[in-house]
Length: 137
Image (cartoon, rainbow, N blue to C red):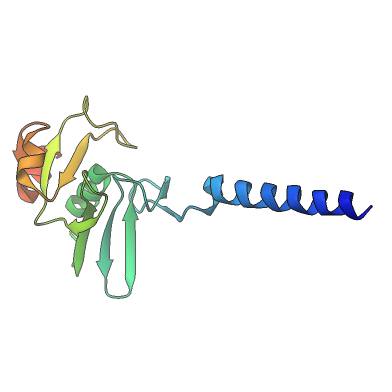
């Protein structure tokens, strides 16, 4: 009886650990401010606007630019994720490549941001923040 209980406890523990670690339900998800789609904060095309103590998230870089053009908000900080590393970077200092064939983004905008201009140029024509905003109108 003790052996069966021990085996049950070990199996239950292993099941609990593996299901918790592998489950996407534990990812931090938010609603995209522009389109309303649920997005994973850790995803490489997620972007955000920080306004004081409020953070607005976007599931796709194109949704971020669309929102900025439509609303023209006064923002404290705009951040995107470097395509190469996944680290948050200042959107105004990033380099962008627009290629719907190379970048399969959540909403199909096909825009990837880069910290390094050289890395960006490996994927196509490089644009700065303002050029990207104009290209996505």
